[in-house]
Image (cartoon, rainbow, N blue to C red):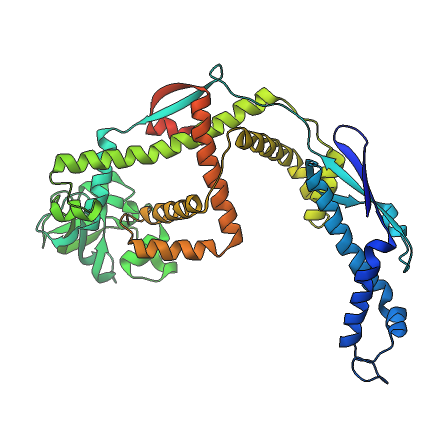
Length: 445
């Protein structure tokens, strides 16, 4: 097969492929013989249909299949061998629709190519990029310690009320002819909408009777009143007066103790022996997580910096629109709405490819597996589960590695982490320390 490429301009080209009889005859005849073996046709025994009849009825479609296979293999082989930096796939021209397939003849096909723009990219110590270190303060550590203690905590019955306690009792409506009365009513006064109503419960004890107004306490919230008074929803707002609440129980959640059991649960191995060591390890854990977030922010800032440094690239926009239309079932409105964003993402993709090549970034199987383990750990850490058994991690990795899309995403994450580390060594970091609150705001823009 004879293939040639004619450059129209820097980002547009036409590829011409001429398929000769010598390219397809042997494969075509073999396909006909294979069809003969499987062919069932009235009047003929299986496998005995004449070749001439097969060619007459099915020859064109069989020939088309074989020519298409040859084209696919030939085109992409040529592109690889000649290192054509192409965007998307070759787009067949309208001329191809006029090609009439006949055995023994040559066929000429033309394809439009969208060529990636040429550009240079480099980073040196002259390039200065922000890097944010997040200050892990004592309150953040205390909040995390409290979260760990919650997991080992328990509910206890107490005699007097404090903020955040749960009260249980009998509620009775006052000054009406047919009062509402409900037993085993449970409330959390802390969540009242009205501060004056909250204060009525300060310091109350079991068996005390508190006079309060549920309608005011819950700001006429129909759902809350329905649940509290145990009345029909449509009747809830008809009870706007005062009620007595006789307290039968007060329940308080008591966090678990800061003891060796907790230390070992969070940090197995027995290295942590004291509260001070425990808080220090917790602080280190929080700082480690923020370090990953800081690296991610650095990569985002580097992307913005280097994209501006490279400048606007020239793209074959007409062809790219055709490619996007083909990928969105010709949804022109969607393509138009997302086109600028697509160009932005494509620009970064090309820049990133060059940076990966320049820095010789390589991802091994072990990198992907380790990333899968880290992703699994992070998912469970959101629910306070830090110590996932190795066996479970291995099983999780095996499941993740079965899905091609998941593996591709893991590879991309590995590349970004390694690229970020490499670029940090290339540039000058403008380091600064910020609060967690200010750091998180940076992602809201």
